[in-house]
Image (cartoon, rainbow, N blue to C red):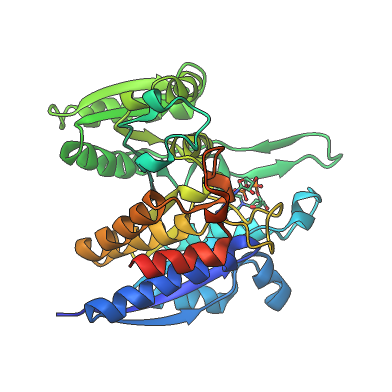
Length: 358
Ligand SMILES: NC(=O)C1=CN([C@@H]2O[C@H](COP(=O)(O)OP(=O)(O)OC[C@H]3O[C@@H](n4cnc5c(N)ncnc54)[C@H](O)[C@@H]3O)[C@@H](O)[C@H]2O)C=CC1
Ligand SMILES: CC(C)CC(=O)C(=O)O
Ligand SMILES: [Mg+2]
């Protein structure tokens, strides 16, 4: 029996619309092939939202988001704000606000390694092979949401790094539950040797660990974790960490998978799930048909599995990507010296190729 779901598509800025087109096309094809009724709506956010309404998260977008069964998001950001630190209204505020409003406190970022891309990474294949990590990045707390201040003379600035016990407990519980059904190893990453908020984090994780004796729990400082991740990524199974640390560590981890264009994410919590590539709007390649659409397509696979419980459909997508890569097709970011030049595709051709293999 098919399911009936309403999906909001927020493509955003830069390469956001270029890649999200293909995520949506894959959803449409899966819906048609498996007899599901997927309906779609669109909404603005980020620079696109500011241009149209003055707001990075227009009220209409938030209302539509709350009324949908899942959200497919692209990316936000515009070079003009990156180059103007004094801008008070910024595209990124839209993304932070929607995460908070929807209670999306858990950001799952799987580091999924396609064997065909072992050579695309600058890391050695023997170090990478067999790596399978699931990051649980806390998403609605930390320094991103703590009070921001600037002194009157403009010469002093601060962002409050703050965590409440309940915030750590709820994300840690999700991570422990996942570790229990995966490799039974959890590494909690913090900076408890220096930061009080990290000491609370570690205290809560240590307490919770007692309820999961079947999970081997380890604590690691962020600086060491950043190093271990590229030295021996296989040592990690579930990684639990705070908002800022998780943001940075997962961009680093994208190099294990080959590219920023390969990492998908699921943001979940109190209500509607939100699915997005981990990358941003990538000004340097926007509008050039160069962006890798696979992270958006993989985000759709996460949506189908996590929000709708459609595991077979999700697997069909990852299988289609696997076959596309096995047959040698690459976007520029995952091509290497051995890639057949005639198989290096732009965003559109890669999206089409995955649809064909579906
Ligand atoms: N979730 C979001 O919407 C995010 C938005 N941003 C915003 O995006 C803008 C650009 O930020 P950056 O620091 O440059 O990060 P970015 O993630 O947009 O790009 C970093 C690098 O990765 C490459 N890259 C990213 N996605 C790719 C893809 N699909 N295929 C091939 N290559 C890809 C880019 O070309 C660039 O060299 C900024 O305004 C930033 O605030 C940044 C991160 C996340
Ligand atoms: C607010 C965003 C720009 C933060 C970010 O880089 C991310 O969530 O990956
Ligand atoms: Mg980021």
